[in-house]
Figure 1 (cartoon, rainbow, N blue to C red):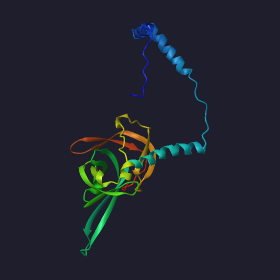
Figure 2 (figure 1 turned 90 degrees about the vertical axis):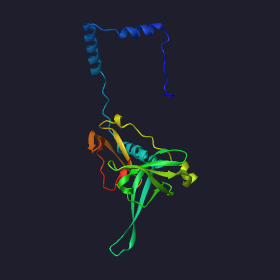
Figure 3 (figure 1 turned 135 degrees about the vertical axis):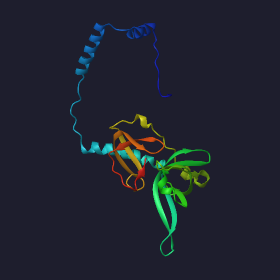
Figure 4 (figure 1 turned 30 degrees about the horizontal axis):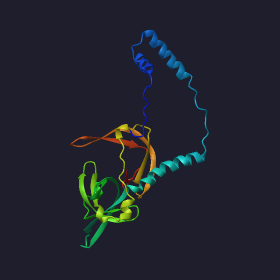
Length: 231
C-alpha cells in the first residue's frame, strides 16, 4: 500500500536476534514464557469507569448517520411505471419505487444495482438522482432468485452537473464481517427515500437456498418493511 512505511533492520545483530527468536524452545523456556505472558496480562491496567453524557451518544449518532447521508452520491431512486386496465377498460398507470446503488460505470453508461421484482413488469424505468434529475434506464441483467437486477443509464442523457456529483460505491468484503459490527442502511430502509438506519450485525451464518445454489445471508437488528430497500 502506498500509505504504508516499511522499516528494514539497520544492523546484522537485529537479524540475528530475529533468527534466534524463531528457534525451537525448550520446555523450560516455554513454561517461563507462558507464565510471563499470563502475569503480564493480569497486570494490564483496566480503564477507569467513564460516565457518558447524552452529548456523547448524539455525537456517535451524528457520525453513523453522516455515513448514510454521504451515500447520496451513489444512491438513487428507481421508478418503475406500468400500465393496466380496470374492470371498465379504463387504462391507468401504476408507479413503484425502490432504491438503487451505482456499482459501476464505463465511458457510455452507469450501472445500477436494484430490486428485480419492482421493475420486472415495468414498461418504463427511470432513475431519480439526489438533485431530482430523472433519467430513463433499461434492464441490463437480472437474477430473479435473489431479486437483484442491473439497470443501465446512458451518460449522454445525464446533465453534466448531475454526473459530476455522482460516484461509484466502494463495495466491501462480506467475508470480513463479524457479529457485533456496526452497520448503516442507506437508501430507503423504511420505505422513505434517502432515509438512514443504524444497527449491528446479529448473525453471519444465515442461508438462502434455491434449486441452483445456496446464498449466504447477513442478519441485522434493524427493522424492515415490505417496501424497504437499500444497501
